[in-house]
Length: 189
Image 1 (cartoon, rainbow, N blue to C red):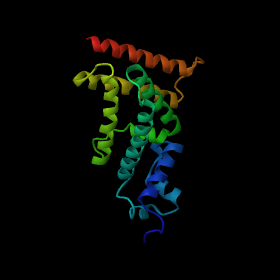
Image 2: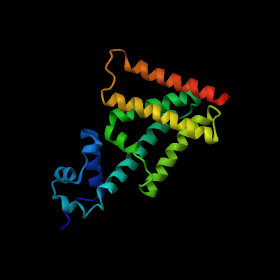
Image 3: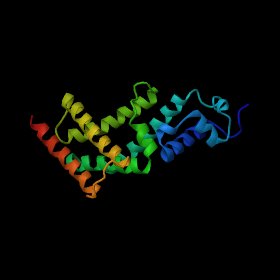
Image 4: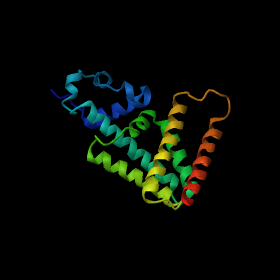
């Protein structure tokens, strides 16, 4: 029997809440069922699998991150766009750590809808790189460097990995300045 008022959207919202408050790794069918006040098997009346829920969570995270990043980057290019991208991602991760983790998952096995959103987000990063005059294969390599740098810093920060008392905001700004310098040099290669 399907519980009245419970649907896929409610299940995904519960999953997002769990991921943001307890971490994406804590998301399970049993945890979802407990939060929703149902028995675990009855969730399958609304979802196909936990992976389907994670796919939806990933897509929702990417859509929100895309909106926030687009707004931050509006009307700027090159270094200002890179800074807007970096700060938007960092703020998003602080506000939504579970959605951040979901947005970082590989999307190759997810739905076409999620892959499409990922491609739109990649297009946004490539637009930043066009502001530096970086295109084609060089843009893909540079996009990977940006992603690895920002994700690494943000994940370390979220995990409490910066123990020295120096201001982490200054460190983040230093990261962005170093990325900017590297991208400017990359254009000359």
